[in-house]
Every structure is written in C-alpha cells, then in structure tokens.
Length: 91
Image (cartoon, rainbow, N blue to C red):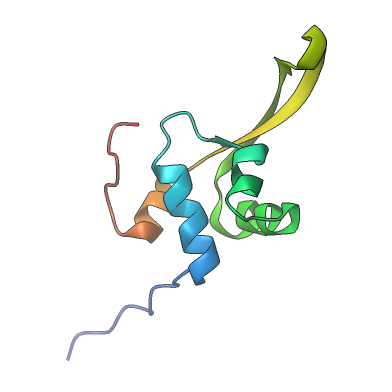
C-alpha cells in the first residue's frame, strides 16, 4: 500500500477569500482595497505570515499632492497552489 501524503493545509474561508482577491488582481491589492473588502490590518498581517503573499510599501500621490505610504500585497506561487493550481497563470 503506497504511503499517503500528509493532508493539504486548507486556509480558513476569510484567508481563502483574501487569496482569491489577490489572485484576481494582476498588480495586487493595496491595504485600502483589502480593508474595503472587509479585511482588518491584523488579518492582513496574519495572511502574510501564514500564506506568504508578497507585501511591499511604496509612496503614491495623495490629496493635495502630498505623498502617502501605501502597502500593496500580491499573491505568490505558493498562494496560487493553495487555491488549487494555476489561477491566472503567467501573472
């Protein structure tokens, strides 16, 4: 009898929804977009630690031409595999 592989770790529904949101966006999603979709900062931090989306900070023009810092998250290949394969392959 062949050895069974360990069960695949499945994300909780809110984590899966976050990964799906990131997978659907070629450029990733800003922290503002994630919050507008109901995710808290704590959930985003937990997502980065547990499921490894890439997160980076950048400066963008804000109101009145002032620069504001923006965090953007993008899904990684590991995150795509968690969702079940080649979602949006090539992005």
